[in-house]
Length: 323
Image 1 (cartoon, rainbow, N blue to C red):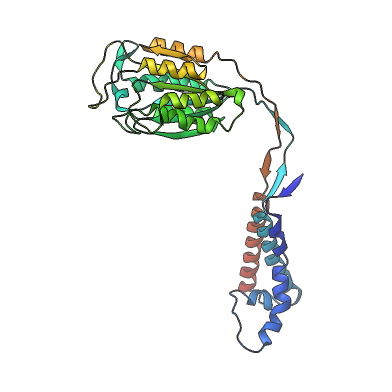
Image 2 (cartoon, rainbow, N blue to C red; image 1 turned 90 degrees about the vertical axis):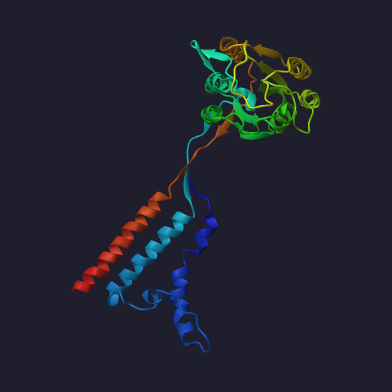
């Protein structure tokens, strides 16, 4: 089945014919007149005499028709397809404050900063999700939405890998604000499928919203918060002054309990991987299947026809010029 995205544009198809019929009258009318570039191609037979001139004009009108049809957006409707709507709406809130530069985690015997470990583990977790909508919030002094809820888990994972400590402020941690920004996205989705995974290595020192207040709002909206407190066994160097990296375990535990979620503590890379493996076992919410019909654009066909007709018209003029 073929349809047009902008069918109203088809009304201008007879415009050249109307100009052809009305132009002689306008030419003899008294008073001012408006000059139209290229009008001689319509009002005269410069393409040739007799039937040959009209054939040239027909080519030009066919070019016009092909361009108008292309602009109207011809589309072909595909077959109905079923899309699985099972899964969760899952927001990731990741701490990117300056303390995430502390090098107190190991990967294969080598010391790495916390952010590098989070990028590796969290991005792998996101890429493995199938059927879930995922979103990403990054927070430091303030929280901001990096990726809204989407089925494009590859892009969300890429955003996690590209995160840089200090991008949202170096010296403070706005945990309450991160929860609130995540809730804004989740509250638009069905209540039975909403989850927030909050990862932080500090305490709440910034933002206008208190974390416990945000947690109570999450509980009222049936959003479960799974909080991860991240802090290595030995503190390294590399953070800016004021970014101590001391995780507020009590606060994160309260936030998780109020919302009906759980609190996890990661002292090393192995524990962090195990936490994400546990999170991966959360029961998915089965939703209704959605039926869609894909649209395939056919605009390239009239555009190709217009190009071919222009080449024919140009060749026509060249051949007559050489005679």
